[in-house]
Length: 435
Image (cartoon, rainbow, N blue to C red):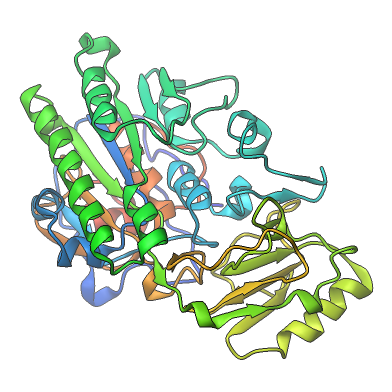
């Protein structure tokens, strides 16, 4: 991780030290936003909206006038790269902390910790701070005296360094979307000192439709149109309260979605000794079902046999040992990184017939290589820290934390973000060399 420091106490905007290098170039030189000299940005508010499963092409192709209008008055990314694996818990927490999974510990939706010999429990895990490492942006803000309000963001249901958001909401999957919007806008009706300086809200609708109907289905298109309407209500609500001009609105997705060919589900159970090795993806009521990837834990002959058999088994299935994975994966956490990682190419999936709980593959899946075009996520930013009508070349989602810190005028915690990338996306208002 790179250590981010203020360049001087008298700066009105954050200036950061030179960026660390990344395994993937974040912004191509021929597609960078001009980082011309800009005036310092006065600290303002941030509203971050999480739209699960929203691929950037969905915004461009379908009826999403509110998202398109936000992009027109701000910055949209050609794509935002998720971290690996390209699943929800991992990525929304990387957005919140600015950290790769190797540093924040959420290496899967339900990670396994080898030291504790325990799998994250979906009922109790969201409230157990030991699973959620790193410092989310709302905790950084609270430490520096800014009130925050969070609805349903991953990692917000637990304490960090003994702190919580000023307002937070236990996850309710069935909470009506209109109620979510109304509650968020009600936060801004509080007296000025009690309004959130940073707020975040999450919507699952597009991801749910993509899984059950496929990423190209009419139902998924309808889901995009629906959440676009809620985004429009949030923007209009801020405008009606006189807060739009001082609020940076950031819309992020965690990943895209791939259409699955149900005839290309491959059984790999014959190569895995389930008595000697642990595979978290094979746990639970439907563990024997299809998955885009497997994380395998263990040692000795059983692990080596699985590696040797799987690496030659099928051209669309890839396997790596710990320490030998592609540099851009970045999930080799000390106690949660897998000893073997098995990854299918879309539209393939893998399963084990030796594990119970089978159900047919669903039409849409994510979790594939985070640099695959189908896994790309949406980023749109509009407001004081963003130039108008710009398009940013692809960048990693770990950079969003630094943009939020800049917009709030607070000192960021240590992150994996790149100040040079932040400067390019914000047109020089934030990041390396900012005024």
